[in-house]
Image (cartoon, rainbow over the protein chains, first blue to last red):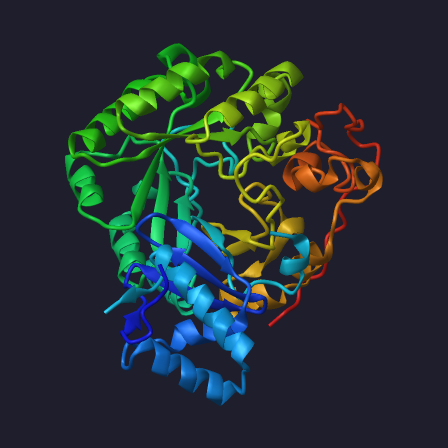
Length: 92
Length: 353
């Protein structure tokens, strides 16, 4: 299911994100799962994700700040869909 | 996961082993760290806490705690809670002898804590021949205590020629407790060096083990048997040597080794007490930089199973007197050279400060 861009999202307390040169690592303490993320913009977005504003607005702001294009926006949105499915982000 | 990804180095290890003390009340014949006696210069509680602070800052997700017997440290519970409070998950390995009712209560009350109890045979005869008289009964008692509290632990079994036929029984035992079985490769490190030849599984057993692991994907291995992936199908895990790349080991006196199986000066990147501390060693040690660049050369390079086994375990080669560029002594194609037939690993200078 796609993420709901009208809603705010957060990283649950049982999830930790660590930036790496190739992108980043995500660890879920509750099921001991480790994930490799191969996009540094995605990792930077996750690190900044604080649930303050709806996901769509946060994405647009991030994309504008970074000067990313429409394709990169879609790539981020798709990646967030997958991360929600893995319990790495959740709707507030 | 490829070597290329790791060449530039991770910001922190994925899997960090911390041996808390060399003291142990047992004298297992295959002990990797040749443990028994506490060393005077072991890290103090305060030094240990500073180290944990550093790991938390580096976002180390979890650590594997061992020894010696970690539960023998008077500050064991204090330090484990210190890790958990700072968001570092803990898995500790114990022989179980000190798991009394109070300790079991403590374990069961903590989130993100894993416990691994060592048992090297499904019968007292087989296990006690390796771990000492009465150790089977005492490990089982620890398991009972955790199981009574509904805590799901892990049973760690080092696979040997002698206990190989008890794999099914070990698996059944773990299931009975709602526990998970973890199999580990015997390595010729520490006291293991003395017993390696007579206890290492035979070639036939290794082949059966590979098939057994494929048939039992719920059995954990900590990537122990990636050299057997060369039989054709990649076993679960990263299937590569992570020494200095994704793993490292801090010993009780603060030496930082490339992995828990190479506690030898030539594989130390430095000591956490030196300026720069742990992070400085992980990020700047010449030894670790070298290991991140290094790939097994020699005959392995032209082997068509290279992508599956990457030449096997560095520690096993080193402690059997082989060059790191030679095939693993348990190479599934029987390509392992004779010990001492090639140059040994050349220690690298440490970067000071």
